[in-house]
Length: 306
Image 1 (spheres, rainbow, N blue to C red):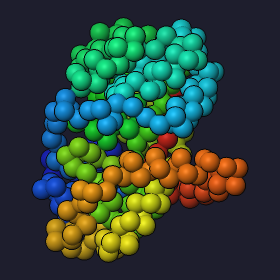
Image 2 (tube, helix red, strand yellow):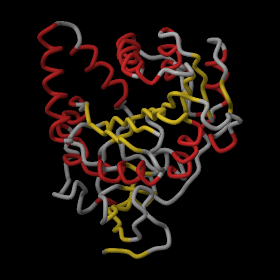
Image 3 (cartoon, rainbow, N blue to C red):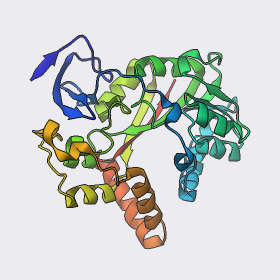
């Protein structure tokens, strides 16, 4: 059933959406205009989100972050970079290795304290209350962040104000139209309300970023957690229709999740295995090229200029 409601799609602002089911006790809605998913607004306390298990990353992640920072070199003027939701501080460390004056922002007191021990200035709180002056940064990063934010448009508008003219927003967010999402529907582990309040399509992400006033918006997709696909299909969790959602989602065992399965750890293991030799690295590179071309990658990579 198509629903008209006062709550709008956080990506495109449409009031037309339909319920695709429930997960974790929260309704999940599909926007009929842009294809993004969202759940009712719910503010989580992220203070307990971080512990010893997620305050460090494997070495190959550091290498990937070094390549990302290198790609931002052309935007360096003031030499100032802000990482929103800095988490374990891995991106800040990569920026520091490249000579940036990097600072962080984090809503988790535990994570902020951890990153401060690494010698970084970290503001504890959300971006709306951050004390940074307008036009202060060359680069602002938001990695796996905008899917968590209650008001993503307001956050992106603040990001734009904090960037200097010509500065860049670089970020990532899950792709709701990825291969994993199409195959697994709401059984995809990334569909996880209320931690993830919304998941964007490419169209929805572009509309949102454009509405915040950015220009030269470039989006591409990459990555696919093949181990999760295999795990879910092998354990009988497939059940999606052509719209990427199960017809019986509220009753599907896939929605109960698998407490013994860790999608992040499995993704790390797969990536580490693929990077061990030139042959598997070549396979990974070819797969990512195909995911970029088709728009089916699990992750949307965002680059947008002020």
